[in-house]
Length: 203
Image 1 (cartoon, rainbow, N blue to C red):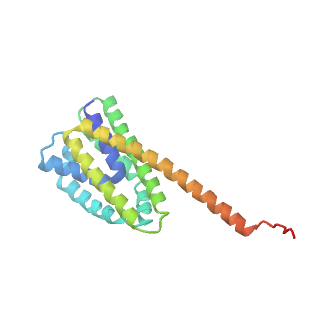
Image 2: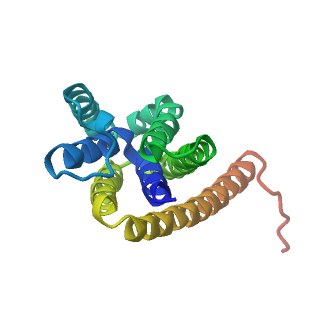
Image 3: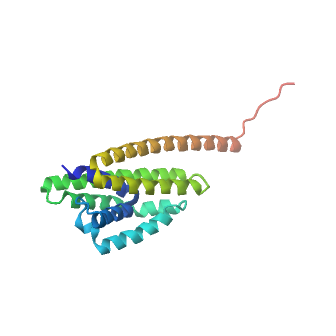
């Protein structure tokens, strides 16, 4: 299945930033003559819409708590975009193969989106905005780089995307453990404050 590596990679990228994924693929297909990019992504309307929405996400994704609200809105959008791109890439494949490729793109996009959203919620526990800006900028660079790589070296891009997805899952696990430990310490401190232990003094 030649479309599978591209479907996986574009699914991962869509889960992080669907509009950047569409924009990069469309520009590469339009101006770099990348044959694997579906023609539908290279139209003026798609490129303009993707570019405008990418600019909106570029700003909102760097503002604490606003980024999490945007992630909530994008919960259905990102996996859907991942599935649509994958289905378009499957092209003239048989119905079963096309369905499998589309499902792969959608599922990977959903997992990638949940990883991003969870990490952002963890980051938002920090009061300063620098971490959000750094995380968002890193995601933008990763999406642009991996999608560009996928257009010319799909298998290498699949490996990179898979590694990044695994690292993200590990990051979510570690962040959740840290948050649970923090909550446990806070509850212990709160209980101690509300119910101070009484002790006796020996003379």
